Image (tube, rainbow, N blue to C red):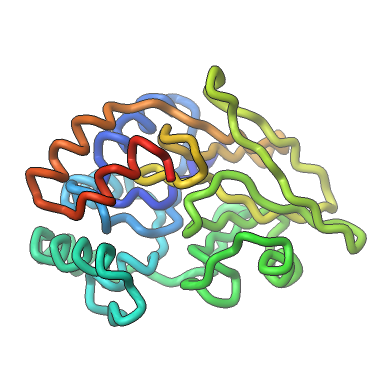
Length: 247
């Protein structure tokens, strides 16, 4: 089973379409680690794409905030402005779908899906110390998480925890990771809609556990067209600028 792993789409349908084109014919099942909406200009279009694909999706903090499942007290003013705008744009049907998304951890097709930390879906996992509990507590050898918008991850075996700096070079489309049992993995496919790891290309992963590989992909897309739609929608300028910077 080849699984297309999507995360942090953030209402960027141009990036999502570029990802789906690049991944065409390479996957059989798709999953999403949350943050379908927020920040970007295309909340209805991105939600509709996932629903049409039948993508198994868990909720992210922006999905919860937009759907009214959680308050926005902890959101910065820029993020809160995007949440308010997004909520006003979404159709009632799409809003209901977002509100009904399940939380992680969610086990499916031999992997586990979480949005943030294994124990708290709203917490970030940047450091080995933050990753350790998830590596130990997950019910699967391979767990995928999002939320940080940083491609890469962690592995653990025999009390040794390793940071995995795996992402394609600027001239490459993907970099592959070999899964080695009984090592455990906590992997982040990166963000499709708003990368923050210094590479503005949309990020995703393809997991083929039958052949013990995970491919970490990057694909270019028309960032300027997304920025133009964001400005037309009067979304905050810092959100517009960071797309080109990948930070």
